[in-house]
Every structure is written in C-alpha cells, then in structure tokens.
Amino acid sequence: MIAAFLMGFLPAATAGAYALLIIHPKWTDNPRIINVFTSQFNTQFGLDNMRTMGIVRSGLQSWMNVGVAFATVLSFEDTSSLSSDIEIEAKACCDGDCNAGCLGRTIITPFSDNCSLDIYNRTAHTSDYSDNRSKKFDFQSIFTHEFGHCMGLGHPPGNPPVVMTQDQFVAGQYTKRFPRDDDRLGGQYTQFIANYDVRVRNRTGGPWTVIGKTSGSVGVATRADGWSMVTFETDPDGDQKSHLADVAIDPSGAVGPTCMNYGDWTFDGVAISHDVGTSFAKAFRSSNDTGLIYVFRGVYPSLVGCVQGTSTLTNMASRRRPSLAFDAGTGRLVMTYIEFDTGQIKIATADSAGNWTSPVTLSTEWTDAPVGIDCGYWAPDGADRCFLAFPASDGRHQLRITKGYISSSGYFIEIGTQPVGGWTLNIAPDIQIVGGNRLEVLHGAADNTRAVNLYVHDCSGSTCVGSAFPLETRTYLGPGISSAKMVTAAP
Image (cartoon, rainbow, N blue to C red; front, side, top):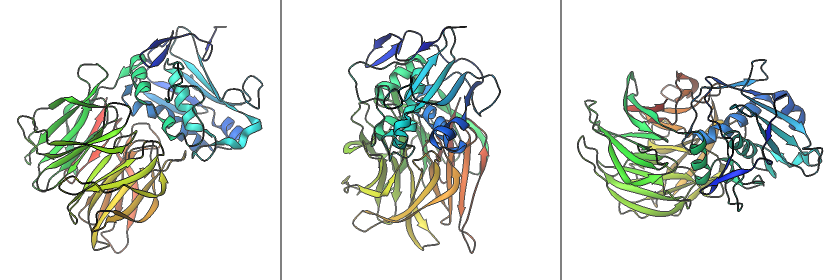
C-alpha cells in the first residue's frame, strides 16, 4: 500500500508569510474529479446533498476568486463510482477524540497531485457546527482551509489571521471563509497565477472579442452616448501583483489599447460605473491587508492614452472588492461593499465633491461574495431605485435581491429583500436595470463552478415574472454587465 502524508505531521518550508508543504504538486489532471460522499455529511451533520455540494464548491471556489488558478477542469461528483482525484468524506471523531480533536484533515498521496479531505464531527459538540456562521464551527471555513492543504500549503508560523492558520473556525470569523492576501500568494506559488482572457460582446448577443488577460474580476460600464469602459486586474509580469488595466470601447465598437496602471494594484478585483456627467468611476481594495477602498472619479474613456482620474483613499474597508453604481436622481455615486470583519453589506454614497455619507448596514444580511448593484428609474414604482444582488450566506447560496432608494440626504433606504430562483456560488453577481422594467443578473450556476447564468426579473407586463436560464456554458472568473456590453473572463 502506498504511504500517505498527513497534514499536521508534514514539515513545512516557509516563504514570505505563508508556509509550504515539502510536497506541493500542481494540479495538472484534466479533468480533475472531486468526489463528495454527501450521505456521510447527512449522517454526521444533517446536511442535505445540495447544501453539502454548495459548501464544498464554495470552499474551493474561494481560492479561484482571489487569482489562484488550476491547470485542470474541475468535475464535482456526488458519491460517484468514478475514479477520483480528490475524495471528501465526513467521519465521526478525529483520532477517537470526540470532544476535542481536529475538525478536518488532508491526506496527500506521495508522488501524485491527489489527496483526500476528511471532515470530522466532534460528536460531543455536534450542535456547534453550522453553515451560516451562527455556531462555533463554520463548514465553509473548514473546507477552504483543507483545500489549501490539498494545494500544498501548510500552517504558517506565528498564527497570523489567515485561512491557513490552524483553528480559525470560530463563530463570527467571517474573514476565514476565503483566502487572505498571504494565503493568496501561497496558493499562487503552489499552483498558478490566474491568467484568463477578458472577452467582451454586446449584451444582446454577437461574437466575443478578447481584449486582455486578467488575474481577477472584471467589470464594464456604458455611458448614454455608447462609450464603454472595461476595467480589470491583470498580472502581466507574473510577480503576484494584480495591476489595474482599462480598455475603452467607442460607440462603433472600436476597442482601444490596454491602459496599464502599474502604480495601482489590488488583491481582489475592481469595479466600475458611470459617474457624474460623462465620466466614469472605479473602485478597488488597496493592495495591503488593511482593505481600505480606493475610489477613482473623473475617468474618461479614450481610444488612445490613459486617463487616470482623481483618486481618493476612503476610510471604508473590505476583504472583497466593492461595487459601484450611479444614482441619477440624486446625482450621487453609490458604493456597496462587505464590511472588513463582519461580512455585513454596507452602502454609502458620495456627492460630486467626493464627500461620503456614513455607511448604512443592509438589514441583517451578510454574505461571502462581493455584491452587485445598479441604480436607475424603475417603472413599476415610478421612481428611481437601487437593486443589490448577492448570494445568501448559507450553503444553499440562493440568489437574493434587495430593493431600495437613495434619499435626498444621500442615504440608502431599504425597501425589502427577496430570494429568487437562481442559485449561485460565492462569485459577485452583476445586476443591471434594463429599459426601466427589467432586471438582468449574471451569476454563477449550480451545476458547474464556472458556468454563466442569466436571471431575468421582467416587469414589462401586468405582473413581474422571474426566471433563470443558462446564458452560455462558459467557464469564467467574473462577469460584468452594462446597458450595452457584457464581459466575461475565461481560460
């Protein structure tokens, strides 16, 4: 029988602020089959197969969302007889210790890139587990940590507040559900830096045009006169710094050269929207682990040269990228983001001079994905409205939409939140008001980690009708949508 390396007993080599296992093979199989024994999770924890598969996908998806790439196609199987590269099981009591013991363990097969993940039920503390952060042990945090081991990461020295530090699963630790900056650097070292094509097409259809390469999320915004700007993070030098890039598209569809901003770089994507007058605005997290958000305003598209705009470092902080919209009724830039340590959804607005309101907390909602937002005239209400789209925070990751408006003093007033038919992974949905009576939401699908789906909430008739259907079966990193253009990133 081939011997196995057990995580926790393998010596680690340290590089930077992360730790590497001596063996950290790159995932090179194609496809890579991940077999989840869901019945065991039902027996041990009472999780149904849909919720279990959602948590598992999201645990691995969280690494992809921060620019860690795999040279493989991922196939998640529910208790399949197929030969698998990764097997995931739920078991009772780690090493016979049902009171304390470990929560999870990764076993790496020597001389291969295969591994197995065992999740343990401390049966003396079964009631301490949850998938909605309400209890002491969070399932997705455990999976994110164990997938990090499977990729070749160890426990970093000094117990920094990152995913790969041991025992980072306590209640309230929202930030441990997805890799922090040091985790990302380690994951990119053991695997690959994401380097996906950025593709753009008209929202109504037509061919895709490749306009660049991205290591993170992408966004697009379109002015009323037809000019569009696409913005994305990219790492052309392979130095693990995701610099910012902008591409302008004129009303005829002519695509300008990539404008590289080497002085600005980030770890988790960039957002863009229309702004005051004929300008655009963009926002992104600062490149250090403080998560403070930079906002650029007065950005104008051009087919030649680079127009930087005016940058401001706000006092708002997040561990995921923010999202932007422009509210024409009040003339204010609207930004939504996930608060740094709580995961609560916050909304703030700024006037034309750049003065921000105090952030408003969206009800009791929280999420583990960036939030999509759009503002505009909504015919069914006969008034300007803002809509936010995000996945629910539990293992089902059901798509949710919140409606509200911006008051005359600049504060977001919440009207209500409703779940819709779509199901998404922890990827930022993009939402767009089209024609004043139709919402279009791009989101991740349930049946493939990278499939693009379009959810439509159409209120053009006597009643509003919602439906979800596949837009295109294409692997992607992050979608974008505007009144004229759609954008996706895919290997």
